[in-house]
Length: 229
Image (tube, rainbow, N blue to C red):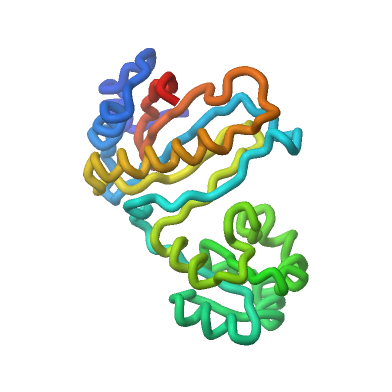
């Protein structure tokens, strides 16, 4: 893969053999971000889990204290009083059955997170083939299947992110933007790591966190020392 001149210059600042402590890694990813837009700061965590086993799956959510820096569009599936509650909480879209053809047939996906009340999951289940592969299916573990739609919407708008294992047993999550100051990125990173450490499956034998890499959208990866976790 051929990288541009800016990337190559930025990559020279990173020692690939070094495991940086978090503060140094954050300073370095900020320094190596060279794109003209406000890049997202991402964390990639390689785990020792085997996601093929249900008891080694990791999935959950955490509210980042300083948000993600991205405005998030929330769709809520609800009925009755919960429709008004979702609208009052600031959901971008609220509906029920009538949204199925719009999503299924018209390919409407102008939202980032889907929340549903438990009594709507029968309806939402019909969208599994569309929402599932995009990671948009509501899930009780992530707090997106709930009767408390106010809390769900407020948390998401405040910077709640979901984390889960991908097929290679790696977790990929955003922890803010390059424009955030280092202290805010550090707080977000610490909140994420606390949640990930707590989520360690009891069935797991051997090393849990194999590697942690911080990177920006277009920048080189910086390896973080996992020892303290």
